[in-house]
Image (cartoon, rainbow, N blue to C red):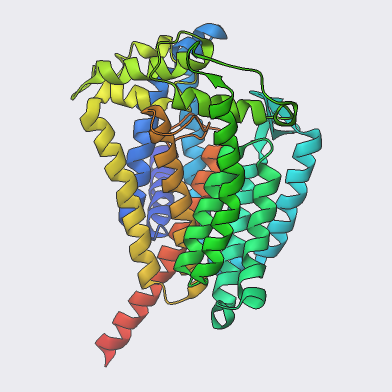
Length: 420
């Protein structure tokens, strides 16, 4: 008679082997992997701390939001892992199709999308009942397509028709489709694109001319914001009819709130900014400690748009400085990857995605400390999970895919040298 099988001994080696296989197949820049772990841990702590008012509003426990965020983190890490296992040249092949799909989705969103927070930016996915922000897919598709174009047109990159137009036209299309519902994201995408084109050796005169044209509508918005604000009575006056369509009044209102926020004002527009300032002031150098935020009960969207203010309140200026350092370290590692990557597409793709994430982080932190007008963008990998969180993870996975292939090429070169 055969001996009985020990169930514990039967399962343990398989689990260990499976975990070992996952770890052994994990490649890429280890510093970037470490940054992902740090930011997701910070996310767990701060989201758990800042969702008290949200839990009270919907009669739920804060632990439910903690487990929800933990679930998004697990899903996000899986997205990073599988995206980094894909050879990054595949992204070049699907870039054109993905760009066309994103344009169609943006058009669909504009006419039939879900309206949340006064903006039509979302599509509700069937079955799972989750909203999906199409601009997240669009900017990822754009940077894939732009990296492909930059890498293929380096021989004619200085030419206006052959080099500049095929790259700038897709950028303009995406930005124009996103701007009506989300101007801040359109401006971030446009600014990042121009920066990448500059690094990609696009003619500087063409870029300066483009920037001059793009600054005209921005200057008009600022001029209207100043001319329609009564400084004596400290209030906005009625807008001309031509500037009353769509979200234009919202854009002008945010500019006015930013420019005149030093005034004593207790209206609804100033409430969020004032509560963020109170949170930052209470944090001082070392903060109130994890979970001790007081502003979380009064600050709207403290778990998403204004999560950096909660970090400053709980962890102080030192904690905020550490967060800035982490994002700059991430950018440095990606620039280092750009310089080491032997193929233009991978180099441009890693640089474009990293610039987009870091510029988004700087914009979020700048809004929280009242350096920039309110933009509504989240803090990458830290703000409470959603489609934006998952697309951030996908972007990091693609960057790590480039890093993995660079690592493999360096390993081959080292092996060749050793055999010689």
